[in-house]
Length: 393
Image (cartoon, rainbow, N blue to C red; front, side, top):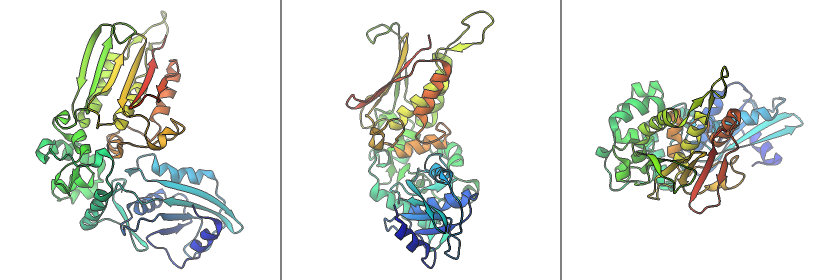
């Protein structure tokens, strides 16, 4: 992050550029979002961060504003609340200078381009913000292909476009992911539309693993671990007889809805503790949804075993392949990172994730509100992540 001397140098630079924007507006969140998205897309491909300076006017003068930590939180929200997908990396710092306060947002260039703000690809063309045209979108896609290291963005080399449900992609997913104005003039081929949303590899001319998990008619034909196994046991141990077993092996576009319905119809039970009292529940449905969706987003799909949901008489255990990932290994669950950023973004587009990085905290709060014991997170077992949710007694 900048020091005070570097900040003054940036403030007094003669004009804005593709890496710098200055503003005194505090309520124009659209301007903030467009600037952050543009910096993260890094159209010039120079691999350098962009800076948004709040508290500096168009004449390069510090405006004498009084700012507090709330402006930093407002800026950091753009990395969590899904207005920008995939999520950008933002760092903030508040400077209390003699002439007034200045808040700096430092935005790192993303390796998962193109990023969209409210469905639009924002880019910087010199000092001016704009929306990407078709050729610029292709540039961002190719840039992503160079850096695409996560499993979900890599090509599924033994699949073809015929293996994915392009009709559902067009009718169900696109209207949620792309703004309506862009869709109205969208005459691009299917491959480019899917590639722009990181479901297709334009370099290899095949769907990505995210495209298979999200849209394939039969994802497990290509990725055996793209399934969820539910087993209900007649007891409190795994060696007890199982009384119900179900496999969810649909694509994610269908699977998330099926899981949500299954939880409400088959796992959550209501009861009256005493006559005339209000209904109580063994588990809050929202907590189970959050934890299962978290397992889907963070699962290691290079492992062939499915995600497991085991229901015992006294608890539910949810297990996904792969332990804590990246920054999440420190200060869990308050730090977050994404093993599958494209799948996480898709879950946000579909409305199954409200904010990035808070699903586990939300689940804990829902369990506490319902009167369930605190869940147990097992993070020290190699190659898997387990959460035990205890039924309300």
